[in-house]
Image 1 (cartoon, each protein chain N blue to C red):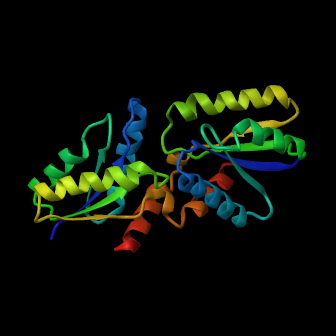
Image 2: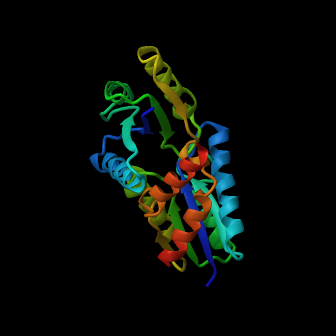
Image 3: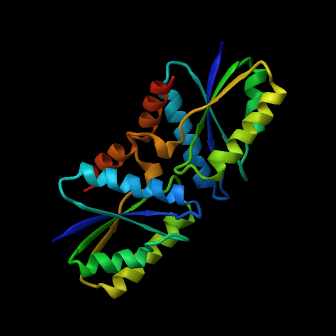
Length: 121
Length: 121
């Protein structure tokens, strides 16, 4: 079973904002021992989620783990991402999809913020 | 000099999303040794940034450190937050304001995401 981590972000009209997501994706990829790590966008920016799901499935990935790169469990996390996954499932019934906890819910986030802010002083 | 950390978030129509910000604020406050840690919202949700700045200044806080709780350096981070700070400065010329790096730029963020995702498997 080949696994990929797919980071889903909102997408922005500002190129610099999208670049932050691509850069984050690269840095997470570097931390893994060869895991395929990709990103896709819900709106505005390409690759779209469907483009990336199709690409991963075509490349033989059979297990796609989705990371919602969102701070809050708003409509994008609760409705849009599950809807995208459902569309992907219909096209690729042999691929397994799972949705990981969204960024804002990661329990170490407050500690990260506190430590990094302290180091800025 | 009394310092406060002011976490600025976007604000949401979904109460649960705002609750996530209040909860994050509480958790960061618990990590500090008595630092005043508050949150305020740019849109939709109260307290507004101006309400919170006025409250902190009235309480004798003379150094307000702003943390933009945003993933990307978009218009909210680049334009709206500095404009809010400028408005606060005019009302409270004896208060020092500084803007910390926004969440998406914290260098340990990729490591946090990677570690927590691995622990979910």
